Image (tube, rainbow, N blue to C red; front, side, top):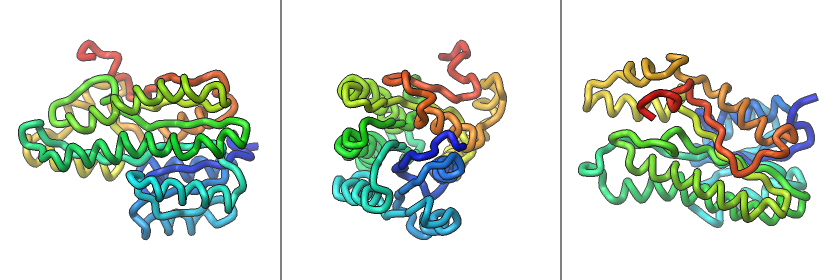
Length: 256
């Protein structure tokens, strides 16, 4: 039996990268999944590969309250209940405070932080009706510490960490657990594209970042998905308001 047998999950940002890994891993663990993204062709391909009995894709802009309502409605219409939310959608851009336009700063906060808040708000009703549930908010090691060029990203990930604790306080009496996951460097197209843009400007190939990790390598997305699935499962039934770090040990060093 799968760790998530009988569970129904909604996952944001599921068309590529970590989100795609979460979708595939949840289905493999027995969950039925509705996932969203703004990358419709990629999302439809993921859903087609997994099959309609286990997985459905919806167009989903996480900054839109209407899109959240539509995604939740699809979950209830297709699978009848909602047990798990994975707030995974996010954007990343390197730029110093001096160089970053205000519009970019606001966009990153809107997607990463406001999108997470809207997701939690949207699922309270159906999770309460289901007798409880689990919300997993994907933050980052940047929710604990900062790095030059990541003012907007770090602000958004600190916000997710704080909102997670507030939501755990507010929703625990409803049987809803809320935890945050804090990955370090993960091999995804978003991270590689952002790192490439920084390297082009700063001649930084990322080797110093890797050398600072005790495990001295980037994570594969599946390594984060296994942690997320644990938090979605009944095995994590006494965990809420907590921070789960998967960073290869980067935060254990003297720089932190």
